[in-house]
Length: 128
Image (cartoon, rainbow, N blue to C red; front, side, top):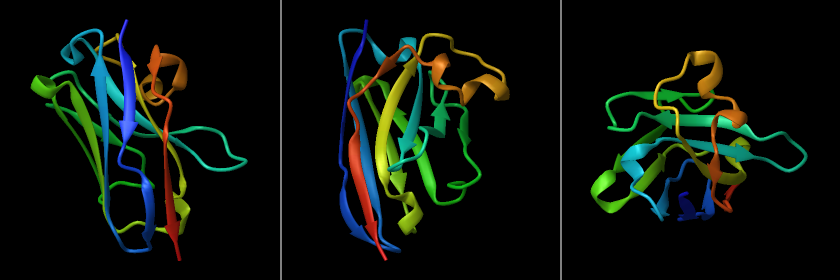
């Protein structure tokens, strides 16, 4: 199985940027499609973005489209989430997750149950 560790979170002012990283160990990352999710206090965990195993395809939640970019470097076993134009509503714990099923429908790629492996999360706080 694969182990995931996120980093890069922190406190940033509204309008600022952060880049999150997710480093995988235990297995090669190119065996997985990867996703980012987030969970705000008192809220359910929600889908943010997904990237195909080779980086050719990316998908985003409407709330982050145009502001966030997911990317990956399989040689470094790392997935990234570049977050620009941050808003207070982006405050949450951000989790990366690995999906053993490489191709999914739009209905399932954003579902938590589609992802078998999860990191411990990294806190992002955006001050207004």
